Image (tube, rainbow, N blue to C red; front, side, top):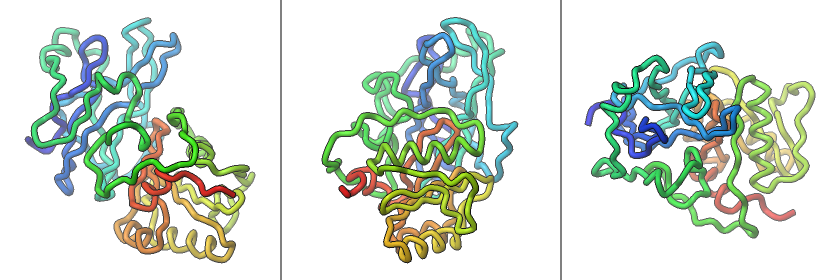
Length: 289
């Protein structure tokens, strides 16, 4: 298979692909991607139709005006702006997936997306029919959404958690709010966001917890990870890092050494663990107070 996305295993009601096997052009690892489903204004579930024959593009810088793509609801015909599908590779590269233009004729849309519910041989692509309209598989859902770079731990949280419900990110403030919601979903209590970001760079804090949220267009750097860890050590608090644009490789390596959980965010509002400590946190949840 080439450097692009493979044939989609999941289909929308009109036959467009909503999932694909994606090969990273940087490290050549394959990932099974399932587009996040969000509700249209009419209430119908809607996911961006993927252009499975187009190669993914590594994202090197972000522009808010370029983060959206036009998608038309097949139920009500409404056309609206939707977050562009993105996939975070375990090598640290953020990949942007191509979406079929709304002007594509229906016969063209269906000709190259013949229904096939089997995964590409040699990959662990999930069966989208079994998953239903749940969007990209959350870390706690049954079965991995893509071959992980590390082995996830079994769920050992004291009480089962419902699936995290993502909300589309449209502003930098939404990035921090999404991180706060996710920490609450993990079981952390009384999460507080300062009105102004302090010089320490601590965007969120709660009892026994501090978190940094990198909502800019640059990947989180080594110094960011070390500063968060030092603040956590001085305050005897657990620390968590969220980033919208991924992480530099030396930052990822240092986070593994310091056991700092790293999460990647995309505009669908679904945080994804990118290292072992993050997987462990998702598996166990917040420690009881």
